[in-house]
Image (tube, rainbow, N blue to C red; front, side):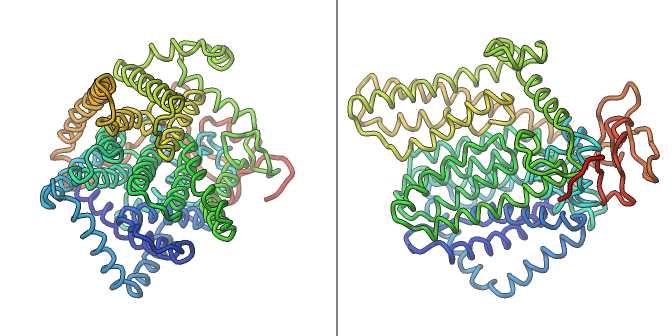
Length: 580
């Protein structure tokens, strides 16, 4: 646990300093109207995660993301602290004082105590051995490739799953602390959860000052989500960060709406966060629809320079992701093989990409069906998919559907009867609705979509309660029933997963009070090819590569037709013409 907490402290310090520099620069460039909006330290921390991830991606194009990358980041942060340290401390003190001023219902010491308990619990949960199959399947191998060699051309030809390129893997490699500790830390998911927990608790600490606000309801969902995903804190899992980012974006967006913030900058900056969330996991891509609001405002004001600046910033966030995609697989986005822009010698076969996508869709929709049935039989897969999921997930799906239908019906009726409608609040709800539709028709597994599934459970009741005074008896009864239904589902998930978290903590004590459990060591068969030693499972072995059997190949025949360079850094090419 102590090792994990030291890792998180290192992440907090460096991401805050880097994020503060990013926010200072962007505010200087884009924030023309110095209004009442004041950012909280959470903006700096999430901005730091975004900037350090982009930095690690760029660094990986030239070498392994190890000691050199860590020292480069430290030198920048030390230099920035020397130049702007006093001003930064003053600003941070003012931000913390402003946060504390709204915490009348919850004393500061109580909040700090809850955060300490959360940090200890999440660190213990993250101190165990990795549990998820994706870690052993390819996440651990991907991180080690980035640590050892950086972004290697054509590495997806060695093992197709290495082409599932997520920006988070570069962040994980940068903060693995392997050069300092000798082992690769793998609990960044716990840090993301702790950061979102702190954001939710700070918001809830002042609930009496803004009771029944929709942002308060979302803050409650943030806390519940961080409890739900404690199972993933011991793994370098790539779904926690995008879900945390979207929770933060939606909550802050609604806070700005409730405070009637007119300045464009905070909305536009949250849209940049949305772009970053997408390069971490494309399953949350619909969050970029939020850009409609600041775009309309800027176009109406003919702010063409600002529009160009925001677009350029978004491009700078995505370019490292696209370049690393092309280098590892030959495609701009690995799973979208139809977007084939580069004729490079290391491009993975399009048939392999298609089969990978088809397999994931098939597994998500129901393995009891054939692949053809799962992919080409309309919606006939839905009953089997629903029945094959857990009871708790089925309750969640039904509750979400009821919330969405009731929200849509009530909104339509309000428009028809010309009743007041908070149109600005419709955009975040549209984002969630389209996000759910996209999730349902792609890979409908709950782990990809927690933020969009929990959103209706808290927001729809909150919207109803906002209208409490203006509602008649029927409207008030509907608000109570809606809140009770959403609350019951939240309590069910929070209770169940809290018990599971206690189980993880019990397993971690006393064995992992100091150190984090290392990656599991698998015994695989060595294969000598081209002067390099690779590792492959036996004939009866599962695809379990792990971290230490490196580099792993799916099967020995995977190297047929590939050219292996004198160094693994040279990559893996196939015999076709082209260059990049």
